[in-house]
Length: 468
Figure (spheres, rainbow, N blue to C red):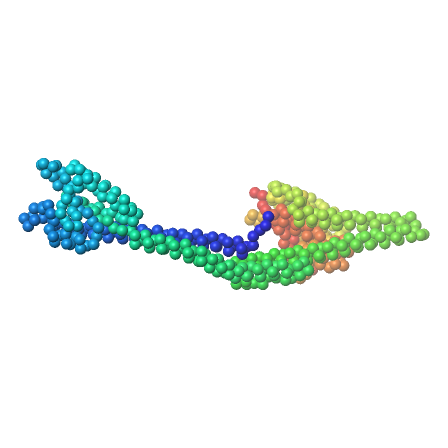
């Protein structure tokens, strides 16, 4: 499926909006103009009818009686108005009954014979309306106003306003395409200028490659929304760079950790296969190789565990369990690890303490921390405690060992990081225990923090959600 460019899509959308807006505006203007013209014509005809009605008061003789012929003065005034009008009067007599008369421009009162002597005022009105319609209903407007025995009909022409409306519509039809074309060009130019920051961000983002993750998108861009996008891209690239560096370091460290035992096992095998080796020497070589195989196997298991945790495929139970029971098991195993050393293992858990998490993973976290404590304590104590703090259960493993230098504290949970590499190798560690402990704690919704002072010991605290 072919996708349209964003700029083209914006121009198309804005052009459609412009077309609809201009056409609607022109239509509204035409309708309003026609309506105003119609209202104005109606008011003019009503005003003319009102003036005629006021002049009808003169349609009487000096004695005040109605006459059958209008005075010359009335005729002159009505004709002088220049309006097209008809005045009808219904008269009743004993001989003829009701008769309808109309007043012509010369003002003699003549009876309307075509309607018959019994025609009513409504029939006269209908007949006059038909006569007006016959001469062009759309070109003329008829206004009727009743005043006593008189009916006043005033007709006005719409031709002037119709010519204006037609001219206005023709102008709109002529100018609309030109206005829409001009608007499209202006919109295209405006969209192009508005998308310049987006194009700049796109170009700079494409320039960031795997070998140049230190580059960043320039900001501010001049548009707050685009600046926010650029900032988000920069943060993403920063995370990718951090992960890339960590992956490179992880790969280098893992290769080194695997190469060392393999080199050692190869050397032991070559030494055992040399001539004149006794059976005892060969058994020693094979025992050394077996120890390295076990150590390498544990390293592979730890790496697999970390990979499964990173990919969120490691099974983690979230259930209520008693930390006291897990701590007692940890204490027993820690005492076994401290056998033959001047280390006292203590525990301070007065009663059941319930947390939400995975008891097996928690046991592994505590054993990793306890093993580190025993490993780095030549003489002293290792204390395992647990207590409730608000909504968390704090499990602490404290020792009185050698401690951790302050510059190393931010990195001790990094994979393959060792505070003193030579001493760590002598202890048998590869720098994955604390990384695994932090990962397992976080998978349970918890955290780990550490407090340490050189030559005074360290305290690692695991925070897990409390299980009420």
